[in-house]
Length: 440
Image 1 (cartoon, helix red, strand yellow):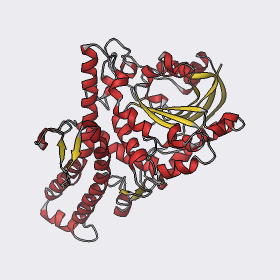
Image 2 (cartoon, rainbow, N blue to C red):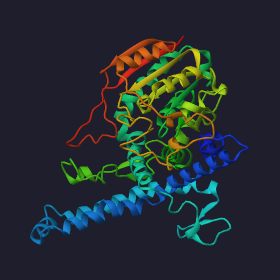
Image 3 (cartoon, rainbow, N blue to C red):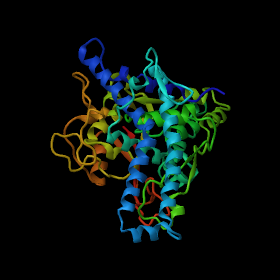
Image 4 (tube, rainbow, N blue to C red):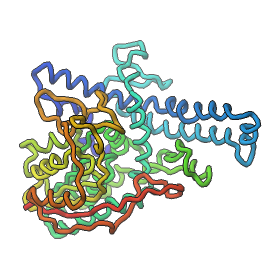
């Protein structure tokens, strides 16, 4: 069976070509910087095992033995058996690391890096493994992103994450089905849907599976590499055991809750898309792609003008420091009469940033993140200075101001967590907005 969504892998491998103009030194520097950032993401997955063992269990063992001896001796015995718990968490880390390393290893060949039989990497023309270019690139921020990306697989690609997906993706899929149910091109697979902020690719996959031509857009290399692995390289359903909550020790009713596993992916994408191609003029493998680019830059370009029949955004618009930039890009690339379907809260990711700083607080501006890169004289896109946080009412007014008619608008009808452990003593619940806006 052919691999699914080869276009997704090709887009990821050539990201530097899409981001920087050619023919000048700045373009070369930008391309080199983007490659360095990509290699740092690869390194963060490859070093997940070592970093997690050190930060999660090694340091905890040190803290445990720093207790008074009578206390740690008590807690080492049943029914507590804390040292046994640390060992079980180590086993969970190893299982998660198998996934992380599979993601990294799938991304290495385009850079001329091959894995030897002993698992070591070697670079073409270089016999010294210590000099392979991805080693030592990851920053603590990169490793945090690798850890959170693995947890997100629970939401997008496990059976247990279906409740969150149904709450977020379900209304979008229903709206698309309703809008295009009687459109002749629907059966041909010619109706194009763009999914900005595609993350790990599940919504793009489901849109394609429903018979549409689906394009995902994502800027995060961690997300792109993970979605590419699952869509292009996973060999079967339930291939890996993932322990999404094992690395956190807070708010667990029992250790069995902390250490429970899920199997991923819950479906084999290639098999599912093969089945979804029956009776279609265009095979699903040709209807699914991922574009690696800054949404605010790439989709304002003339080549994207009036290109898509629908835009689907899920938990996306609040990632904008300036929502107007997102709306302008959507207004440019959506066809007249096309619909924009949105589900999500307003947890503004850039809130409380100092003026002129693209992101502060949870993430410091860094050369290791493509959002902070500059591309010659081009727009910085999401990295431009300035930010503003709007209320739900203000968002609706802004969307209408830019030429959209709000045909449906609900708030509080759906509720969901986000990578939420349903058995945790702490439950964070979103009541996201849902709306359908048509471009006039």
